[in-house]
Length: 72
Image (spheres, rainbow, N blue to C red):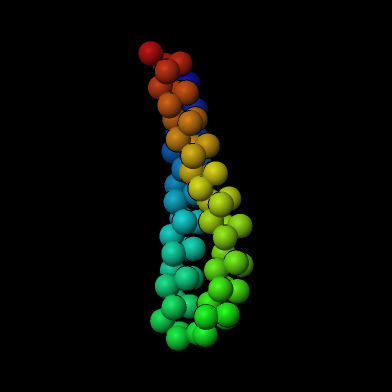
């Protein structure tokens, strides 16, 4: 079950990296001084990636908790 914990940690880390990518992409778009419509379009492009990253991170944390419960 230790493998499940490490797998969950790796999946969570990938999700976290995806979230950081989303944050930096929107931050960069805001600093570029885009118009409201262009910024809104950029945010709409990032939303699916953000949602997938959150789901991945949550799934990884669930795997970690499951591994800890099964190890005990």
